[in-house]
Image 1 (cartoon, rainbow over the protein chains, first blue to last red):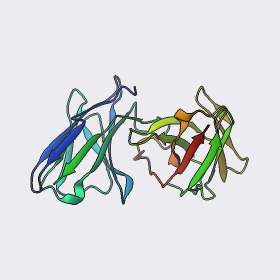
Image 2 (tube, rainbow over the protein chains, first blue to last red; image 1 turned 90 degrees about the vertical axis):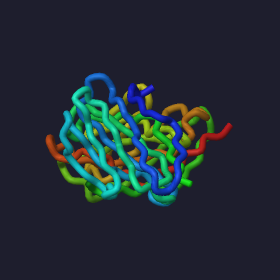
Image 3 (tube, chains in turn yellow, purple; image 1 turned 60 degrees about the horizontal axis):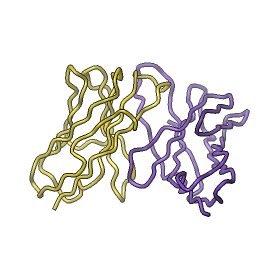
Image 4 (spheres, one colour; image 1 turned 180 degrees about the vertical axis):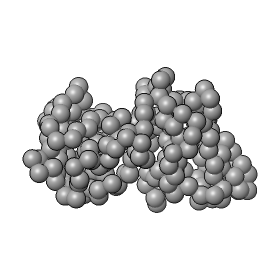
Length: 114
Length: 113
């Protein structure tokens, strides 16, 4: 158990809908990352937050957004869902910003868009 | 971040050492070598990381060549539960910069009886 929790574990929804994925980092970790893993793209970085502020963006679509709240939990919002958004979404957390800190991953949310 | 090259797949007999190589010939002086693994569709699991010295923890050992252009992850006594995809990742150590992990395709390690 990494100490990172993600809810829900599974989500099935229809095209055009909007969903929210939730992540609680390990106790004491200030940085949260979101990754997407699809069959054809592998594991890809989406976005990073540190202590409530966005710090880096990867290949995140404009239909996707995220935020980190004062209690440090984070939410990833996916809207106007398309079939291609079906994937595993992982959240990770680390103590700080620097690359010296290892990232610990949650169990993921499996999103299926029908 | 520097690019890494790993074999697509490897087999290892249970109880034997698994040696997983990684080439990172373009690594720069301020980049760490990290190893993660992913068992089936679970979240990636941190294994070990190092800068230039060899490192060992309860899970594995990391051997980095003197020129830092390649490394080997060693699982000393592989078990069936070590069957996973292993990712070698090079990552900047700079404070304040984006410290995302860039995953390649990894090595699929199959441990057999």
